[in-house]
Image (cartoon, rainbow, N blue to C red; front, side, top):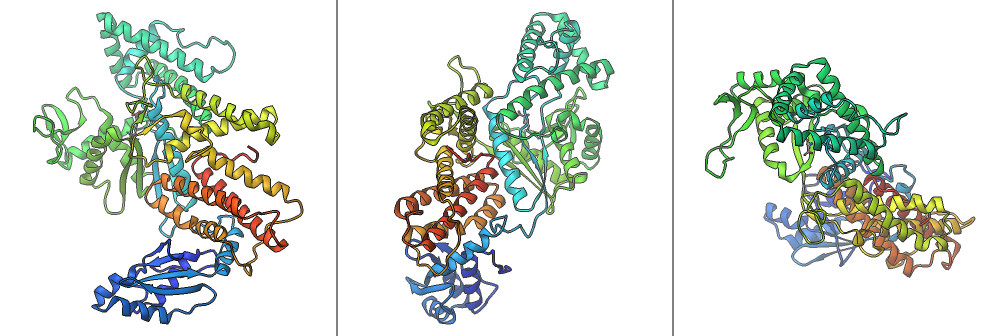
Length: 589
Ligand code: ARG
C-alpha cells in the first residue's frame, strides 16, 4: 500500500512503511500491522508473503528484522511464533508524531485519496404523519455519515426523501376543501409551533380518515381528488402544498430539538420526481427491463419469490396508471446520478425496506443507471426495541412519538446535570443548555454506538448513566480535561519528545495515534459505530491516565507540559469525534 509519509502520518503508518521497504517485494506486500498486547504492534504479513515465495517464514522474518534500522522510530523488533514480528516503538516517535498532528487543524486526519460525490438519502419523515423512533435512526445515522464523509473530503449531497405524495392526499385535501379552517393556527399571528402544526395535522388526518371509512360519497370525492392532484389541478395542488408546509414546520421543530441542521433545498420529497416518472417508465419498457403484466409495468427477478413460489415483481406502474414508491426511487436514482453526478448513493433506511431497495438497485443496474462506476448501498438499520425487547410501543400499544422521547431524555439528563451543577459552578442557563446537550447526545449516542444493522433497546436509564458506554461518560471526560486546562494557569501544553513515557501515557498516546485510520475506516465502511467505540475507548484510556499520572502535580515542569499536551490532544480528538457524531461537548459539566 503506497502512502505519502508526511509529518502528520501516524506512528502506525510510519512503522508500516518501514516494514514495507524492508520486505523483499516492497510495495507489493502489506505487512498487516495490528495493535498488539505483547508489544505495541504485531506484523502478520510475513506469513502470507513466505507462503507465496515458498520461503521459510521465520527466516524471512529474520531477514526483515535485520534490514530494519532501529532507532528514532522503532525501539525493538523481534521475531515471534511462526514468523510474526513484534514491534515496540520509541517514546520519542510517539510524542513527535502526536505533536505534528496536534499542530494540524484536522488533527492529522488525511483526506481520502479517492474522494468522490455521495448522495445520502436520510431523515425522510412523512407528510401529515407523526415522526417516530424509526425516523430518529435514519436522521441520526445519516447525519453522522454526512459529517464523517465530508471530513474525509467527500463531496456530500443531502437528500431528505420525505413522503409527500400518494393517494392518502386525496382524502386529506378533500376534507380540507370541505372544512377550510382546519389548518388555521389558533395562536393567530405568526407561525404555528411544531407541536401545534402536528396536532392540527393529526386531527385532520383522523377526521378525514373517519369520514372516508364511513361515508361512501366522501370516499368517491376523495378518490376523484387524487386524480385532480395527479393531473396538477392548481387548487388541489395549493391545498396539497399547505399540508407539506404545515408538516415542514413540524419536521423542522423536531430536527431542531435533535440539534440537527436540515436545509430546505435538501428536502426533495417523493413529489420532487413527478415529472420524471413517465420517462422512467418509458425507458424501462423500451429497454425491456420492465414488462407489462396484467396491465402493470413490472420488473421480474429470479431470486425474489413470494410465499407461493411465484416471482414477486417490482411494480413500477400500477395497472390503473398510478406510480408508486418504486417509480419515484428509480427516478431519484436517475436524478442523483445524471444531474447531481453522484458516484455513490447511500440510503439510510429501515432494514424492513431491504427487498424494495435490492429490487430498485438491480433494476437500475439493468437499465444502466448504476454500474461499476456508480454504486448504491442501503445503510439498513434495525428496529428500536422497548425494555422488554419487543418493538418500542407505548403502554397503549401505539408507536412512540419521537418528540416525547426526546423531551423525556432532556428532562432526565437535566436532573443528572443539576446534581453536579453546584460543584462545577453552573448557572441555571448552563444547566438547561447542558441538559439538552447531554439528553440529545445520550439518544444519539445510544443509536450510534451499536452497529446500524442491529436492533437496540431504548433504555433512558442506561443512556444517561455516568458509567459505561454512554455519551455522558465521554462528555464528562472532555469536561474534566477542560477543567484541568483552566486550572493550569500559565502552564501550557507542549510536547517533550525527550521524556520517557509512563505506561498509561504510552497507551493513551498510541491510541490517539490511531484516530486518522479509524475515521477513514468508519467512512469507508459506513460504520459510525466504530467511531463511537473509538471515542469510548479513548475516554477509558484517558481515565486510566488521569488516575495514574498526575498532570498539574507532575514531577517536572516539562512533564506537566507534556501531560497537558496529551490532555489537550485527547480533548480535541474527543470533541472532533463527538462533533462528527452530532454530539456536543460542553466545557463545564
Ligand atoms: N419516508 C419513508 C419512510 O418513512 C422513507 C424514505 C426512504 N427513502 C427512499 N428513497 N425511499 O419509511
